Image 1 (tube, one colour):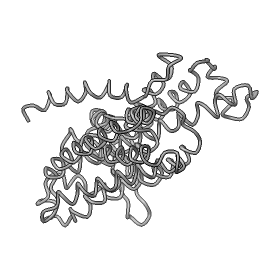
Image 2: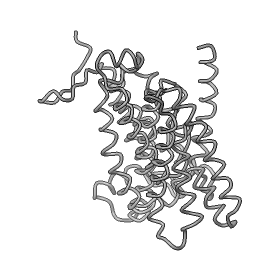
Image 3: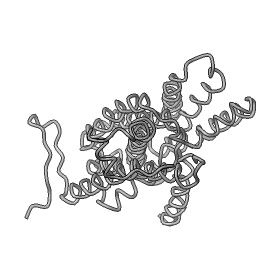
Image 4: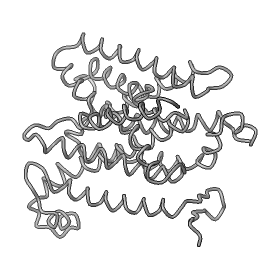
Length: 346
């Protein structure tokens, strides 16, 4: 009995040979995500029956909950899933490129770069330029800092160890810049910046959803393009080059995708941490090490983590709305310590 299913285009340009367990896991997580989606829309300062939620979404509702669902909750829940999915895949890419299970966008400097771009905008341009330019500033910051890390790591090519060490160093420097900007800013600006740095989906609207969706729609599927060569690179650069893999170009493409996904996530939800670290590890616990299979599962798990964190953030301490990043950090920090402990002798 064949335990694998193959997904292949007619031209043969894309071909993925995945275990049936992977497809079953994707199906299960998709169903759980739908369940969580309905529950997230149901609970809040006022409870709405899941039946009424489904009726409203299908266009058969009475209109009684139109404002609460369509304006307040639905954009926030959708944005939570997209941000989590983007962070999950970004973290997966970095862990494979760097060949380090402790790598993630917030640890090696990508997230910090986006934060610098956003804080510079908040401190110097808030009030003079429309707030709609804040996401672009964050993405630009992530791109500039990531490019700097890549260039500083270059020495006849980029090796994973140089990349992660340079990323940690540059991230520390960028955090110092952020702290200095906050200290020198007015109290109101500092408060807003701290809330944004923690990571929050408060005030999410349809414009945020429409702006974030193209990044997820384009860059997550693009991750499958170099998927067939990723496993080969895990054997080492020398082996991969000997087998004809263009290591540097593939690594650059993957890093570009990771920066785009992480930067866009930070742009629309702030500095939500540890999702990029935790989601790929949980995915590997479920299905093993098939990169093509890990992409959708990491995306689903990342979306689930952020969605759950946001539900808890806006309902556990009513009438307060706690930043979701507080709860992702509460989950991720112990998990990070566990990974360090587990890998201490490796």
